Length: 513
Image 1: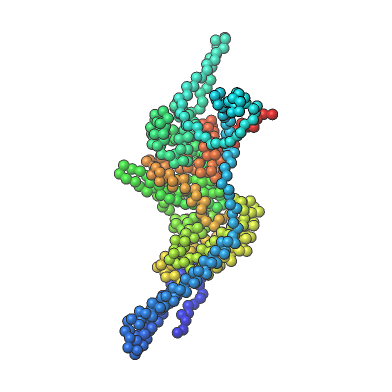
Image 2: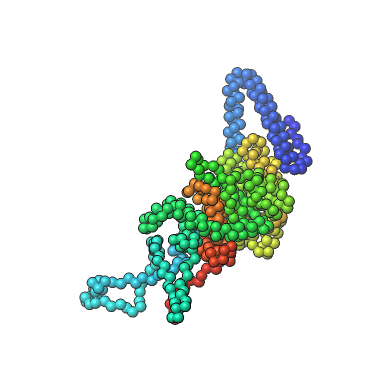
């Protein structure tokens, strides 16, 4: 039998897909022809030997299946052994002990523990025990102070001059809502409890009631709403800065809008850079909504395979798309049980891409020198790994309509976007930065099911943006929110950005000399 020959000249990924589909169709046709021929020969031989032709054919097919299964088991065992050797060769992380975790951020409170007068008796002579100067046995325990709500009465001192020509009163502290009853600290805590720690307002009301404070969820939302309006300039400034970044991560997930008649699907979008996580909760995930979010952006968007991003890249001037290798990896990881040999090979190659990235230590993308080193490594090592990956796609031999075939087509369709990182050290392999930023909203969606009004989506987007951006910059999100809110109250329109925030110095706990 002559081997099936296919013209090897292939241009675009679309051409390669057509060639692969043609090759698979011809291979299947040839296999069916051989099976029919084998069936006829087996039946003829069985008749000559006086055996049942169908039983003889079934036995031959079963023998072939067992032989093929054994061959695949041996091949898989070899791949597993090779994978274990590679894993053992990887640098092992040092084991951490299980000792107490240092707590440098906690204030230290010293509490003396003394014997009662009845217990301070000598066990030898019965005399009274006396303290041994400043000698103690010390141990530590982590303690929690119960949250307490108080009704603070502000007595603003009045002043007058003896000439009776002037009377003055100490100014009231600034309020988020002029004349309101709730302090800035209270409002910041309400916002943090909901959009940072995912405690619904109704649950906060019940917690407050246990501590003696009677309020309503609407009252709490009104305070947060007022604060968000003051923080709007900060939110908008962060959003504008994302569109100035040369590389921008983008992602989206559903966000329910809760109505009396049911829920309607809205979408929370994120635009993320190494320093900023900006959120917008909008009515859909359509191209028209994306146009408003990325209007005027010139640079590289890192995203998954959602068609809207591909459409933006096709139509937008000076806008490129870099696709996510983590999404590719998950697709093959999901099919590992069904295609162990094929998936093990491609997953190993993708892991090698990440191994190259791991050679550059520190935060991504790093300074100019780190970027220069990363670009050189990608040219020297990642480029060759990519060539192996694309060769694998042309030889894997998956059926077009199988899950493996769909995964291969997914890769080939995005070949340019998956290769774009080679030419720019600021482009990462994946879109994990955007996915990490969405964890807060995703957990919030599960806990309080979305928003009840359009205004609620705006309030949520503002607080998620400020909290997540503070975390990206390793800033205490609660302390930062308070500082940003106070700055906005003092100077309406002012925008205090997380990297501009300076925490107040804590008093030293060291004893004075």
